[in-house]
Image 1 (spheres, rainbow, N blue to C red):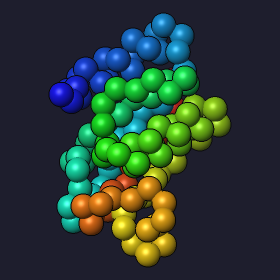
Image 2: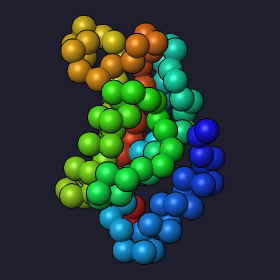
Image 3: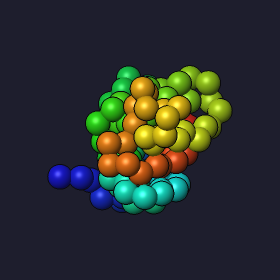
Length: 107
């Protein structure tokens, strides 16, 4: 069962209030078939604990890894995943679509 957006955002706020380093990933664009709609969230702490979903499978793992890097570096980034030739050997979407995910540190 997926958490609601309000659950995910409340967790981000609570984790941050409790001193945990936190990043928030948000689906900002989809094209074709995508597992989660625009606006879907995933919150990640500095130890890799997470709540929510922006995709699933390998993509979710890649977003968690990138979120931890964003927490450490502080600079937000936009990630893109799909099944185009250049991304076929990395984390991709088996459904044939493409997604863009914005990842930012929560201050």
